Image (cartoon, rainbow, N blue to C red; front, side, top):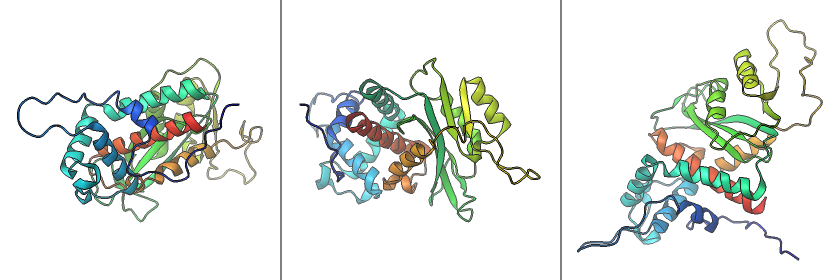
Length: 280
């Protein structure tokens, strides 16, 4: 009888999980052989452990002590940005999504989309006044997930950008190929727009968008197809956004560069996909 694998209750903040490391090391630059005098290049595993710690705790780079991971904070930050410029974080996310597809099969039939606003006290690119937080600077994570809540695409905008303007970016930037089977897309009232509906239909989806009552419409609920015939399915994307918010570097954006914050989000999505692939 096959032994059931139970997910650990506590996260190890100082060590990258083995499944994540197995995928990540395939995309990290090879360790050059030491030639001549001087210090040797720090191992990628040590650096990734430090980045993993910052992702979960949200601490400043300069607050990291060299004795914790055997790497100085300046090296950690430099390697983190260099890997981002080389497309490493996108590659890790793409490979982890393919692993999830092989292990569990992507449930394309029902997909959900939503967003989450996060404070950005330092400002920077892709930030804007948050209309739900007294116009403070903030950013927004837009997420498209499958029926289980596995991330399929991520997009970053300012907190003042309406959700409906990012749906096309999410659908277009799904990193794996869509099947030709029937697919349903679930969204809340923020996506109730004629432009969004036209785009969703052109992409071959069956739309299940919560209706937003316009001025002058009767108070009686409008007969929108799919709202009563099927159970609620949008909660999976809200749960995944909640999983992302557990990581303090994502809950509050302390990166002035949006590319750095997106790197953290992609790394977090890759770890979520690894958990879904292994533990279901």
